[in-house]
Each structure stands twice: as C-alpha cells, then as structure tokens.
Length: 334
Image 1 (tube, rainbow, N blue to C red):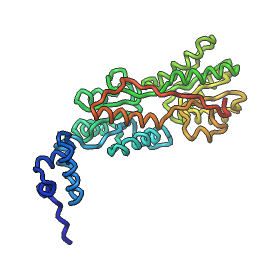
Image 2: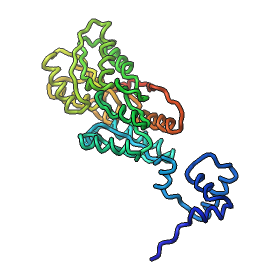
Image 3: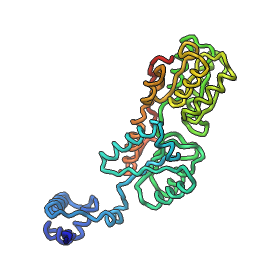
Image 4: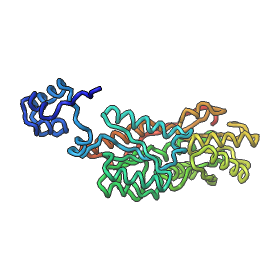
C-alpha cells in the first residue's frame, strides 16, 4: 500500500501566492507576517492538508510545546494513595491541555533518575519545568535557572530565585489549633511534616504560633506525610504524653494513621483525643470518625503552576510568590 505523498512547503506557497519563506514563517509561528498573507497561507495549508514537520518546527522556533512537571519523589510515592500528587497533576494537565501544550511527568526518586531528568530538561526537550514536593537541598531548580530553563516551584526553596506557589500553611494551622484551644483542649500535640520541606516547617510554625499565647508546652513528633509515619508518631506521642487530649496532624494521610494508633490504644475520638488533619483529600470524609481538616486547594495549586509557566513562556512577568487560601473544614474528629 502506497503512502499518500505529503504536500510540500513550496506547493503551499504556490497555492497561497506567496514565497516559500513566508510560508515557513507562518507555520513556525512567527509574528512578522502581515495578517492577509498569514490567512492566505493558513487557508492554503488547510485545503492541501499540509502539516509542518514537528522536529523541524521545534528547531526553528526553539519550542517543543512540552512542559515538564518534576516530582522529586520515588514513583511509588507519587502513584501511591497520597491524593496530593494526582490532584496537582490534574490541575496542571487541565491548564496545559487548554493551551495546547503537552505535560511530561518526571520523577527523580534515584540518582540515575535525577541525572536523566537533568539531561532531558537542560537538553531542550521541554520548554520549561515545574516542581512539586521539593526538599530544601534539591539543586535542580536553581541549576535549571542557571541554564536558562524557565522554572516555577510549588513551595518556597531557600536557595532558589524561582517564582513559587504555595498555600497559607501558617494561617490554616493557626485556625485549626485555635479551634482546639477554644474547645477546651489543654494538651495539644502535633505530628508535623519533614523539616527540610517548606510545608513541614510552615505547619509546625502555625502550631507554635497558635499555642504560644496559651502557655501550653509544644509537644512535637515528626512524620514524612505517609500514613505509616502517622501511626508511628502517634504511638510515640501516647507513650511520652499519655494525657494529651488533642493532636493537629500535618497531613490527612498521617492523620489517618494517627486515628489507627488511637483506636489501638483504646482512646475515643473526639471524646478522649480530638484530631485535625491538613489537606482535605477525599480520604478525610471516609475516616472513622470523619476527619476535621484544613482544606488546601490542591488542584488549584497545579492550575496556578501551569498558568505561571505559560505566562513565563509568553514573555510575561509573574509574581515572585503566590499564596493561595486555606480553610478549616469541620467534621466529627474535633
């Protein structure tokens, strides 16, 4: 079976009554062509079924129409039961799809994976990179910036000048802990996140700020945002502070683990111990009891990441930092 011959650039130029160079400029997205000529070329290309060669077009425009979302976690973590990641990805994909861009999802859970991601992004295979779930020591965002790659981050990175998007962690946690204080809880502990991540630090800061005026002593355990770490941290808190009567947990997955440990210990929730989480993932509604939590707009984080990246690629300025709001969602656990 013979493959149908593709029309050439010269044939499109002849049909449109313009030069080959004019056709080349139009199909490669250059804006220097007068509107009547551009329309004539577009009409001729549509009539003839002309499709520009993608590789050649990217060489001319230096654009791939692909944007990477880099998650510095193992694939197991990214595609586990942590609904943060798919919600961010959904938000990013929605915006990029509407803009006609391709999303390239990349993880850097190993040294080899990190090296591949570095070569791929710096090698010009994507037009820009977005980062989610960053740890402070990660050198990739600043490395990308130094090599001229547009970068937007989810979360503040101390050593990087890249623009970043986050939520009001401190304010959200303060509202949660102040609710526990107003309810008469007198020994409020926290299970916070990793302290080499901006979210972990900010959520601990919010807890400390809310507790400071009360004179209560801070009682802190650290998890890694997984359910198992919530189980282990809650067990340790109960061993060290058996009379605690409330706990703020810095993620819903960890809070789910904390509820498991509290049931094991024979404590009732919220009778003996009130529990508040953070995220408002779907799991929060199905915990036993349903989890009071701080809602962060996870999908909107992804959409904002993508919007900022598209603005950068369009030559626009973006804010150095963007903070999205949080809110306390009341259910039965507190």
